[in-house]
Length: 285
Ligand SMILES: C[S@@+](CC[C@H](N)C(=O)[O-])C[C@H]1O[C@@H](n2cnc3c(N)ncnc32)[C@H](O)[C@@H]1O
Image 1 (tube, rainbow, N blue to C red):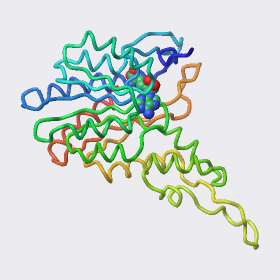
Image 2 (image 1 turned 135 degrees about the horizontal axis):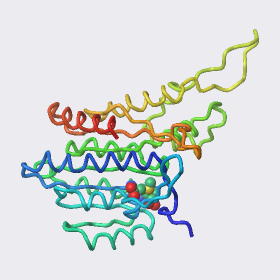
Image 3 (image 1 turned 60 degrees about the vertical axis):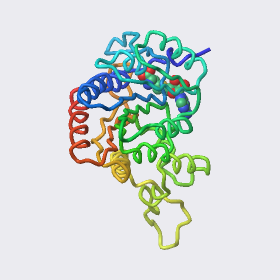
C-alpha cells in the first residue's frame, strides 16, 4: 500500500521544511528568556520523514519531516502536539515520540476537530504556541483558522493549496458543482469568492446570453484575495512564497501552494517582529 513517505515531494517540500526548520529555533530562542510555556502543534503531522526528489537529476533523498524537526529543535519546545488522520502515520509518530525529550501527544484524528480543543486548553497568560498546517489539499476549514486567530497567542505557518483553489474554482462557473462550491466556502469561510472571481461573459451579440459566468480572476489575483482574507482575521500576515510544481527537467511548473506566515498576537511589536523574521526566512529559503 502506498504510504505518504513514498510520495516524492520536490523543491516545494524542501522550501516549506527549510522555512520551518529556520523559524522554529528562531521562535524558541526569541521566547527563551520569558516564562511562557512553548507549544508546537503540527495538525497534519505526517510520519517524521519525507522522501524528496531534488534538483535537475531528481536525486531521491530521505529528509526529516516537520515532526522530527520540531522534536530536534534547539532550544526545545516545552510540549508538542501531533495531529494525524492516518492511523499508520499516527503509529509512526508514536514511535518517534519515544526519542523526544519533552512531552509529546499524538492525536489520531481530524485537524479541524482536534486543533480547537488544544487551543482552548492553552492559557493566554502562560502559553505561546506555533501551529503548522501542511495539508495535501483543501482540508483546512476557515473556522479552524478563525480559532487560531482568536487565540491571540499563536504564530501560524500555513501551506495554502493554491492549485486546489484554482482547480475547484473552474474557469466556467457552471462547472462548479454544489460539492466543489461547498468545499470552497468551507476553506475560504465566505461565499464572496463567487462575485470576486467571476463575471458574466462579454456579450458578443445583441441578444441576451444564457452563458454562465466566467472566472476573471487569475492565479495572482486569487492569491492576493487570499492574503486580504487572512488579513481580516490575523493582525500580521506575510506576503506568501509561491511554491511551484517541479517538472522532470528541473524547471518550475504551475504554482501549487502559497506558503503563508500569520501572527495572531494583536500587539504590533509582537506580530511585527514575528512577521519580519518569517518574511526574511521566506525570502532566503
Ligand atoms: C503533506 S503531509 C504532512 C507532511 C509533514 N508536515 C512533514 O513535513 O512530514 C499531510 C499529512 O496530513 C494527514 N492528513 C490528511 N488529512 C488530514 C486531516 N484532516 N487531519 C489531520 N491529518 C490529515 C495525511 O495523512 C498526511 O500524513
